[in-house]
Image 1 (tube, helix red, strand yellow):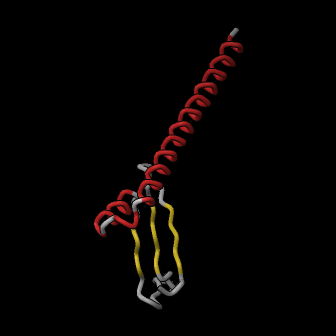
Image 2 (cartoon, one colour):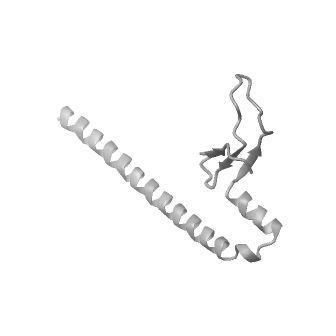
Image 3 (cartoon, one colour):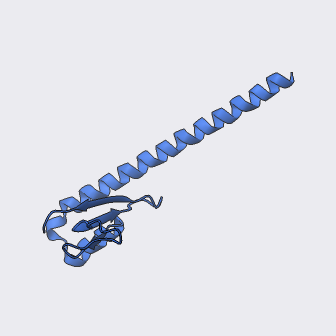
Length: 104
């Protein structure tokens, strides 16, 4: 009976973990859908937005851009990209970083 009880507790814990993963996935899907809808709305109105409204949209997406002086290097002598963009649209604090070495 003790073995069966332990197996039951383990199965229940696994079930609860799976339920939480499903709930997290559903919440993430809803956040992505909301973000996609917002992006479509902003994109449809991009031509009529003022400069301040465009900056507000970038701020809502958590966009930060850092531009480096051409030819600058870090402490190890490795060249910096010409620019680096950080995007953090969700409150998870996970950042997506993109950089370019192209000239403006």
